[in-house]
Image (cartoon, rainbow over all chains, first blue to last red; front, side):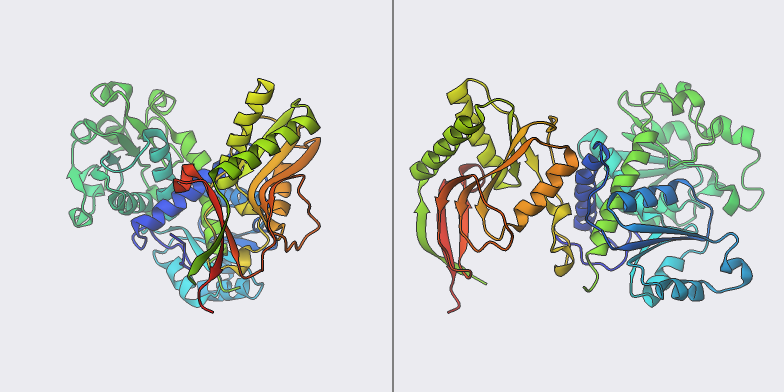
Length: 308
Length: 182
């Protein structure tokens, strides 16, 4: 199956075969990380612009390393101290960047749909690196890659996503991606942090942590997205942590081979106890490693799908 | 474009004999010492495995075999409508200071071998790189010459050479195909 899309905007758009294609490509890219010389000439002469209107270290660095290992020229454009603060519109900024002939623009923006808007107006490929509470497709893909690597398959698995579902773009990408790959998804969290029409996405909803994680093969713990939250959604951090935080004690009733994932950054002591974050169940750092491989795969597939 | 078989060039015994001869030539030239075989995916890897078995039969020790995927090193990436699938390189031994014999099924323009040499150099600095091919069909576009050849096969450019191997195609044979639309 070949990649034919100009952009990667969401996992909701993708077919299962396309997701498999990215995961297979990413699996092959991982070998490059083990080399003494971590560079292949594949995207020589291509330019990747990281256009980040929202703070990010991990994702931006991951895209930057991915581009550099493929020999692309990677340029970082961060919104602080830039034209956006001087009142330039998103589209104007993007048009200005396009005038410098990039091949791929990687966008993060606080507004859902911003990457889709850019994709419609720019000739180059656009990758959504997180838009508001909408999607974060490369995170969804790296989660799938990590699960497939550890479990050997995806179909038939059961995943619990726990925490702030409402404000999480990772949850949305995970749900769409996992459903397409035949995974049963349960979301769990306080009622104030679960979107009302959540079942329409084909997931189970639970309001008890112990119930949600009891039979899960994988538990995805999410951070409270304070930056996107109104006040009053949770009584206090301490109570949230007591009820919804994952501790070794609560893990006792889980499957012995359960995997703990987290998209980072982890708030130790809130959603994850330090003992769990560092436990043998945790694959959080594998996720980071796989993030580079997935982004290499995405850059490779998109850079080739453009008209020559 | 559909194609039909024009002629069979090698049957299973002839193919096996060609690989046996290549194995003997590799041993004779390199003495079996420090030789590693690296097959170019997909059929080159299978051929490399078979040559390694034959060298084991001659020398008593089996040379290590690696698999090279050259997709990331191709020079025609942006000429294609979509990116070819990346299938991963697995070379589980250091190649530094070694004699590496690259193995491929068909040598044509030489561009695959150019890419394979670049890929190999990125993994280390072999002492010598040699090239073994089952079929050399001519029409080189780069200054590349094989060291071990199973069969020299003059072809026209519009023909294609199909190498079929038990492991992939259920049968060992090499055929020339020509397009039917003429």
